[in-house]
Amino acid sequence: MTNQLFRSPRGSFGVAVLGTGALAAEVERIIRDTGGDLRERAGAELMLAEPAELVVDATEHVGTVTAVLDALRAGRSVITANTALIAQHGHRLAAAAEQHGADLCFEAAVAGGVPVVRPLTQSLSGDRVNQVLGVFPAEHSRHAAAQAAILATLAFHTRVEVGDVHFEESGPAAAADLAAAAALGLRLRTLTVCTRIAEDGGKEQISVRVHPALLPVTDPLARVEAPSSAVAVEAEGAGRLMFSGDAATTATASALLGDLITAARNRVHGGRAARASHYAQLPIAPLGDTPTRYYLNLRVTDHAGALAQVAAVFADNGVSIARVRQEHQGPDVHLIVLTHRARESAVTDTIDALTDAPCVREVSTRWRIEGTDD
Image 1 (cartoon, rainbow, N blue to C red):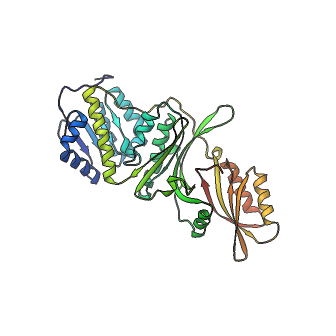
Image 2 (tube, rainbow, N blue to C red):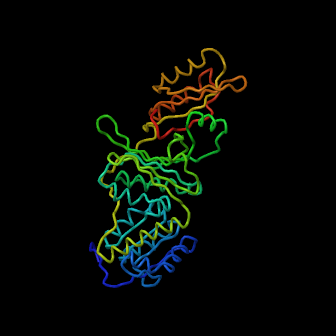
Image 3 (cartoon, rainbow, N blue to C red):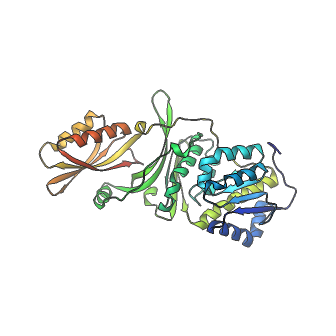
């Protein structure tokens, strides 16, 4: 069957669950224990049985790509929580689903139980998304670049691969820097950043990054603690929208079941799940072209004129200083500098020049700042 809407005259569907871990077990438990409710919501009985017309992928590795492709090519709808699978093979899977009249649903593949895929593909499909920021639990860090690629693909209608994502590991942070940031109203988080960059002349690029960054303490993202996840979407019409929730197994299973019901309904009534589009194909901005703000901790000699020398280095490289905080520690002074927004390359050049300045002993900390233009 090709390019046809599937309508089932039957009152039940077989469901196959891929995986042997806790997530697969929870999905199977929900199907067994709440079958009556699921039947009313889906419009058909959902049973753990073969032949399966609905396949739930509760695995974590890309090794299931063959099984998922086989299911889609057989006209079976696939519901997956497999972040790596969607990030690396999503376009192949979507093409197979389209060709064979099946659904590919992956709400659970991004942020677990936080509903953000459906808003991006449906609720905001008539809007223009300018930025997506995300905070995820530390144990999900190995999937951070993959989740960033999926979010950027959906938000900007552009195919973004995992290799397009700039990724920096989160190392230990000095207590003194955390305290200084807090005094300035900022809090450190590992942040997923997907941003549309519009330049003079109408040229647009996108930046997709995962790295430590400072956020205003008033930003809801700054207050997210594990095991919760949160995603903020900024759209021109809708404004800033927040999606938050738990990333635990039960929450991810909930997202899988939501997609399972959607896929079952579509088979009963002949609908199709929303699909990602890649029509825009915006280029990925080089990191140096990305506009950023920075927190810099400079250890400088304590003598008259040191601050003026530092300010001159910033001015020479076209980076404007927003705030300066001085802290005396021993014979030296720590200058905490917050910059205005500038190209990353200009900030990097500034840091390189500072390390050569006679009054600067070291640039000990460099953190990007997101969520504010102050």
